[in-house]
Length: 298
Image 1 (cartoon, rainbow, N blue to C red):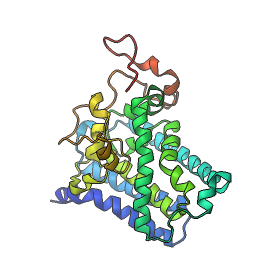
Image 2: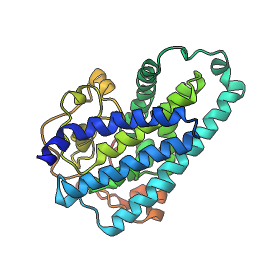
Image 3: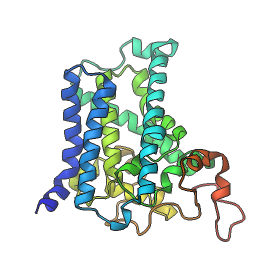
Image 4: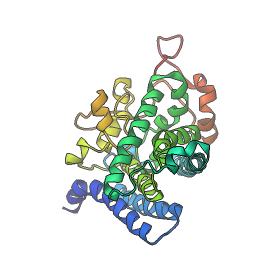
């Protein structure tokens, strides 16, 4: 009974509850980093408990070695580079390139909920465009490939990424918002939404997303994005919203989940050094049957 209820309400409660908690902490005037880290950290622990109580697939339970690697990635490859990118963009907005921000283009007088909707729509268009480019060009696939090396989907697999990928994703999603002058409160809520939804997308839980799947890019969509079948993986590019996938015809949402997740034809060693070096020596790890060279695309 408890598992059934959790399966149906867990995703929206954790996602929108995290926004409510973040907004509440914001009223206490806590530093943005503390605010975001606290909310995302607490939700991460709740998702870990959910996975432990009711995993969707036993095969997706990570080994200790892979779990340790993904935890290191979460801190050093995703978290830290994203914060560096944020500081850089804020510095740009404060300088000569921040004309729009100083002119108050962003509608800060509007209700926070409306500002958040605007931020999601604008930010997601940038994130969608970059993510799709990663799958359709050889150059950017080199940067993105590490994220798809996860053969087991679980909460911490969301942090598995190359630092270049983390910086560019953050820039694609947030640059326009920062240069338009979006306030710190909106940027913090965006960081919480992205962090929590990213963990839920990769979580090894059987979440029933219901009507949520029409708007949000949920774990139902994202599992197919991690399929070893290229035609399935080249879909569902949205980080937070599935809207732009629906608009541009890249949404894939059959029932169930792919038979296999990870990379087919590419074996990158499960070490941090190999993952960070992958963009520079990717061909070394590729072996495509019947092809003398790897394909131009993913």
